[in-house]
Length: 459
Image 1 (tube, rainbow, N blue to C red):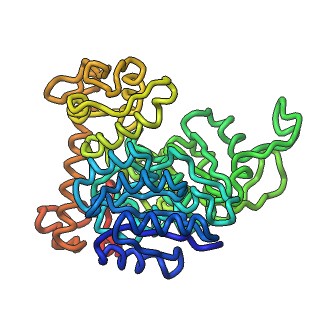
Image 2: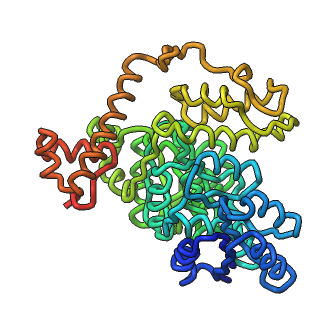
Image 3: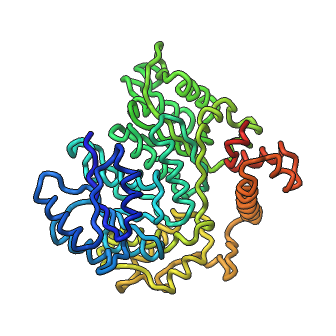
């Protein structure tokens, strides 16, 4: 596998040195330019030679001309490298502008090692660079959108686990992007050229789900007139994504446990086991610990799939990302309505940011698609937004049951309080429990419920 060739365009020498330190050992060759003119000259020369650049890390705030102007000149020069915009200030507006100018990605400074490597590697693979252009490329829509600390922390954890074969469970409310994170894990893993297979555990009844997963042999049941491989076989060598794993029937859970333990399974009606080489990523919006206590989920399976937990925050807890997400969905879907809509007015954005979004990112995407249909200008206006009339000016969604909304508020408070508490005591649960006035065991159980058990707290 050849290394990427990366052009870093930044007038700050420290940024270049950080990029070299993070990338040059094994991932990329790094070439530096301190301004736009030098960058364009280097890119043109590389384009005419045998080693064009694969990725351009371009600072948005350059001294003589903006990153937008440099990107435009690179495009005119025929440079087809993937452009990743960098900025140390005004992260959200710069990220929105990066989308409008067609940049491949955005990264905030200071540059985090794992975050930077993940984005550069993804851009490199998108250009088809890892195996002479013959690799499976990430889908254009498989980009985790955001600019807050939560995303940097998420990429840090993704970078740690993606290169391994460890089983991951992604916890989050419906619509928060769990499948997107699973796809990102797959695309950053050594299995990225192999299949990514999705199993919707909540969509099928038990009998059909078992057949979908494991397959069957001829004569296994009525109408089984030929052998059929299931989704486990389809995912061989790649990643199997179990969406809403908490909905698996207990009988199927037992069979899945054998797959995780021994990497083998048996088709319905078969008399021999088959070997399979897969990585499993699971997702759920349910509290698996509570399901275990209620007897609806196997405890041994929970420990097998929840080796490396990830938690996605609901959209209401990262409202600062709404302008980025809204702009992303405008650019992603405007082609379907055959309109040149370039963005959203300030009034419409303010209205979007004030909404509680019980359906999270999926609901926001739905509303942007609706607005694109009715918009009659270059920008989506507030009048184009078909927002839930049941939501009052105070941000209370009257269409949802009281208990459901109360649970959301309590869960949000618990997560915020526990994060701050554990951080304040550097993971020392005894000291944290004393400050909180709680029994240490109860504190640990609450941390486990929210997937926040610190490394020291596990011992």
